Image (cartoon, rainbow, N blue to C red):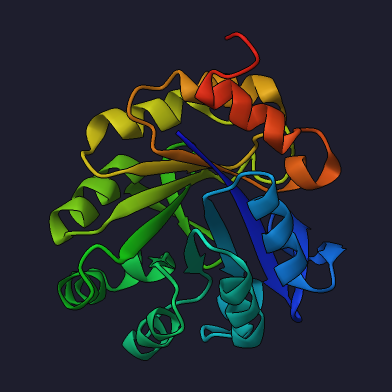
Length: 244
């Protein structure tokens, strides 16, 4: 299982929002590439980058910072945040981003996902945000009546690379991930699943690592605040140091 540091971008800086609220912002790095280098030096192989301004505006808002992160980081980078146009996917892939994440549009325009999966095979990740098993869209403002597993199966049929699953009631709150819902989703699909939301401790990492076939877990606030020591978490996953 991969442990994937998150770099959330707002106004060109590395920040975190509390439960997705733009009014509750913590700035961690003025230069996001410094965050990328830190996690690379600590052993990260994948980065999760979210363009928060892009998510709000529906178009790429932090391209210069994304480019700097790409120049600094040797591993794979996935980028999301308001991606709703083929041109934006092409642009991100052209600057060296490995995979592009689409979210709300998967619900609003499934045919778009089908088209971009054909055009960019193995490059598209669908982000599924859910509350009580139901899909949330538009930056978590609206909760639909679509079940997360139902959407995941549909997107899998379209040829996505994988899924990022976020339990939005837990994200940024350091309350622990929704293990049961994550496990149920992993067991329902054949594509890689990356868990996100609520990871607050080494114990949370251990519990997620026990889900067979879970591809990765994204962690943000916990590694920036020091609640999780990233190197120690990697040792646990690799079985090098701390016993399970």
